[in-house]
Amino acid sequence: MNLPCYIDLDQARQVLAEMGLELNPRQMKRAADKDATGQRKLPFFVDPIDGRLKIEKGTLVRIYQELQAQAENRSRI
Image 1 (cartoon, rainbow, N blue to C red):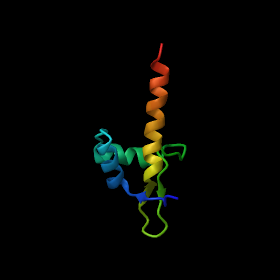
Image 2 (tube, rainbow, N blue to C red):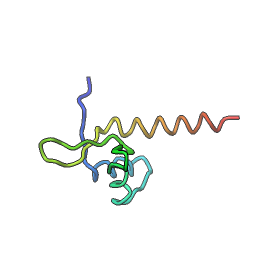
Image 3 (cartoon, rainbow, N blue to C red):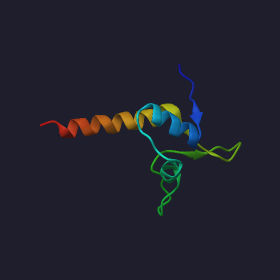
């Protein structure tokens, strides 16, 4: 069983950069901030201990892998 690994915004940027997705800090913050309806583009949450935004590393990677698979499936003729 793998334990969850919670990462902050900067660490999430590093994980995405390792996958070839270079985002600047502003882009990452926009993905984590709530929109007008109170929803986030990515499932970040406020850590109750330190008050910073966190996301589970495996969830972040899985979201991008699923989106890639969907794009590949749609592009097949």
